[in-house]
Length: 179
Image: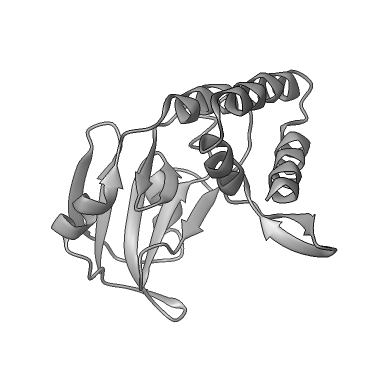
């Protein structure tokens, strides 16, 4: 099966020919914690769920924040398949430029075992909605300087007392309330 890998250290993007088996993704990342995101139509982006705590480099594929090396396969209904996105098109979607806010956040988060994509519930207009840590970072990255500074200061405090997950939920609720 044709897949695409992105090596974050070298920023090398290459086509791979892999034989997909139940352990292929785990073996590729040498990890049992794998994140899956489907930002690219008819494709699945796989990342190492431990990448943040291992201080791997974050970057964007389109507007999707990913961390560390990436493996991309095609996806039809429930099965992995050959990738169909041309490498040149994929390259045009990738940005390695992160704001200072994101850089500071990831330095802090490397001391945790937090995951970008784990969903959690917050209340909006009396209803539960699901958000995740990636959304929280996206929203606060767009905030004014003072708000970003507050976020970073409070994030560091939450890490010291091992309450980062609760902190991110609180920040998500504050963002939803202010919208």
